[in-house]
View 1: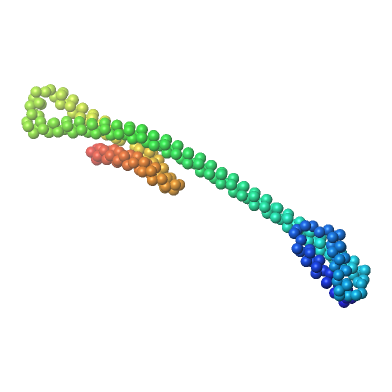
View 2: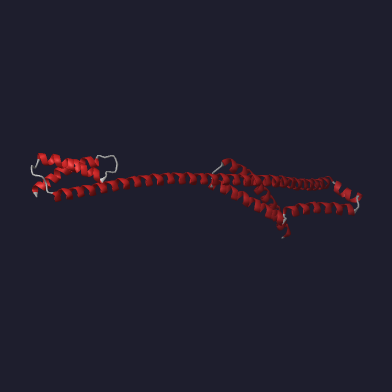
Length: 254
């Protein structure tokens, strides 16, 4: 029995050396049997002069065959895992590329939409600013005419010409001048105190403020912020001016 185990150990050592140095090539059972036979001949001649029993030789060959099958299965499993890993890696890379492309397209569409919206707002604000400028000039012109008329009356009163004009002109002329002055002042106050104009001012101011806040949050663009700020300042100035006229009118009414 001891001789049989010694022969099995001597035979198994070179066979394992050949088995584990193979470069992932399946080894059939026949090849292992040949290796076992050649190893048996060498080991028996060197270590033990007595030949081993047939049962031990058969069992040894079966063990070697099982080891070969296990090694073959291991190699196949390793190849399969490598192939699956390579496939999954490639799939993940392609998915990342697709996700990046979708994100870039979405950001590009968002930037284009934002640019169109800002251009539309800028054009509307420019048109409204021009209209507000014309209205402001008209109000200032009416105020200037009213101031000139009051100054003229004051000058005539100081020089004594006012009483002379009252004697020369009919009372109707004085009433007409007063009516015209009151009409000019009333038109100025009404144009400044219109609710629709006030709502338009408030709406435009809110839109500009939201656009400035969106520019700060999404992607700070100082050029857009400067343009929107330049639009916001005259709107606030005009709104405060008209509200001042309304407050003066309310104080006079009290």
